[in-house]
Amino acid sequence: MTENKWKSAAEPKRTYQDSIFRMLFSDKENAIELFNALEGTDYGPDTEIRFMTLDDVIYHGIKNDLSYEIAVAYLVFGEQQSTISANIPLRMLRYLANNITILLDSRELFKQGQVKIPTPQFFVIYTGSEPWDVDELRLSSSFMGEPKENSIELVVKVIKVVYNEGEEEEARRNPVLQRSAKLREYGILVRYVKEGLAEGKDRKEAVDAAIERCLKENILADFLRNHSAEVEKMAWRSITMEEFIEIRAEEAAEIAAAKAAAEAAEKATKETTERVTKEVTRSVTEEVTKEVTKEVTKEVTKEVTEEVTKEAIRILIADNLEEGKSKEQIIEKLKRYYALTEEESAACIDEIGTA
Image (cartoon, rainbow, N blue to C red):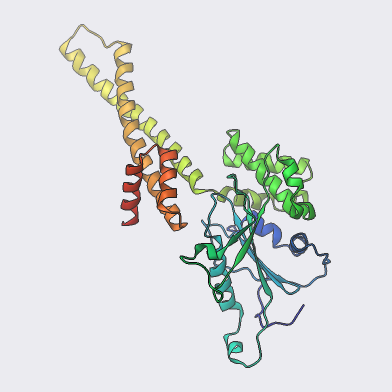
């Protein structure tokens, strides 16, 4: 490996916050295979490699970044699991700046001789469901004006790894997946989990079923046999904001139903008592009790659902503002997901943005 001035970096330590991608490719042999697939090279298992992943970079509670030095290259990977973000080059720039600050001895910068560092290369591993037909993302697309000759540029290659049923031909045309069995099989594992969720399984059931299916089909078999418990925990924590909102809404609906039933019973009992007192000989019919329960359930469910919807809208707006989405993009999501008018959507964004 070409001599450079990077400081020594510790071997990566697995934690419960690691993503499955990070854990899988923190293995030296798998990391070399991934580099060969990306570059079309043929480095062997004895090739020197240094992992340089930062310990404190967390996205939505999951450490899904990975970086390492091999040959004269310094590779930075980020996994995009949910919605598409145009801010990935900005994230990569910040990641590179943080890594250089930590790993480069600042005293070297004041010497006359030129400091040599490995050539940085940036990749985003896309495992989301939305169509994303781009091959690369450029930092310059975030500039307010046209980039100048002396402007900085950072290019991120987009590698799609999850293909749905019926997209096998498209997957076969992906040269990176054809050269890296581990990356291809990782995409299949993610796909099986998504299919399980689409069938109505909860996340644990979907993950368990996906692992069982992969073991039967000899997909990531050794990795899953050795780390199935860790994979289950990681997959459970890999949850998108949209899924979080949906889960919270389901929980709120269950609470609303229980609350409505309790209040309906209490109200029905009270009304029955009053009616019996007023009309000694008259009993409460089953139909009256049903009507009371129905009205109370409707009233309470409506109230709780409105509160949950408001909170879900607030979370969606805050998350998208943090992601750098434009006001128009957020308005479209609010109109699509919550049937708000453009004026209502704009008012919600203004309220959250100034809070």
